[in-house]
Length: 306
Image 1 (spheres, rainbow, N blue to C red):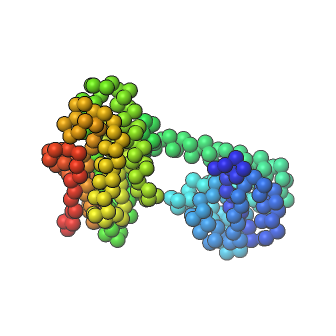
Image 2 (cartoon, rainbow, N blue to C red):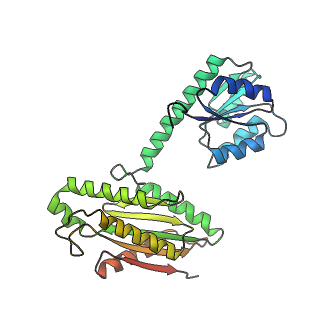
Image 3 (tube, rainbow, N blue to C red):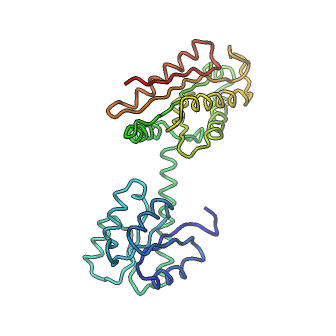
C-alpha cells in the first residue's frame, strides 16, 4: 500500500449523487469503488477486499442493515470495517447498526472534515489489526506461516476439498543433520540457515493458494491444494535443489558437505469424515523413508485408499 494510495473504499448507496459527494471528498487519498445495491456490494466486497465500506442504510431491496449482517457472516468479508452513512438520527437505528458489527456512523448531509477523519481513523485501525494478525500467524525467524496457522489452513482446505473429493498434496521436509550443524557452527549460524531456507520456500511457492510453514525446529511443511501428485513431486524436487543450491557449508553432513534436505510428499483425495491429520502422518512416513534411503532426496506416495 503506497503513501499516495493508502487504502481502498467501497461506497454503497442507491443514489448516485451521494456516491459522487463522498467520492469527491475521498478520491484524492483513496481508491474508490462503488455499488448501488446490496447484491453488487457483497460481490465487490468479496472480490476486491476493500479496506473500508461506507454503507447507506436506506436502500431498496436489501437495506444497509441486511448487507452489513450478511457481510459479517461471511469469512472473507467479516473483518472489513463498515461505517454507516445515513440521514436517520434515531439512537435505536444507530445502536442496531453497531450491534450488527458496524464500526461508526456518519450522518447526512455529510461534513467533509468529519468524513475524512472517521475514514482515516478506521483505516488506521484496520491496518494495525492486520499487522497484528500477520504477526500472530507468522514465524518470526523464517517469515513463513507458523504451526498454528498451518494447522488451521490444513483443516480448512481439507474440508473444502472433501466436498468435491479434490486432491490435496503435502510436502514435509527437514534439514539433514541439523543438530550437528548447530553443534559445529553455533545457533546464530543455525538461525541464519533457517532464514535462508524460509526465503527459498517463499521463492519457490508461487501460487496464492499454496502455503509454506515452519512446522517446528528445522522441519518445514508445504500445503498444496488441488495439486496433482506429479506436480507436488516436481515442487519438492525444486525445493530440494534450491536448498542445496544455497551452498551453506556443513562439514558434518553425510549427504554432502553442505546443508541438504530430505522431503516426504503425499497426495490424497480428500474425503469427508477423515481427519486431515492423516495427511501429515503419511507425509511423515515418506520423510522418514527419504532419510532411511540416504537423505537429500524426495520420497513420495499417492494415497487413494477409499
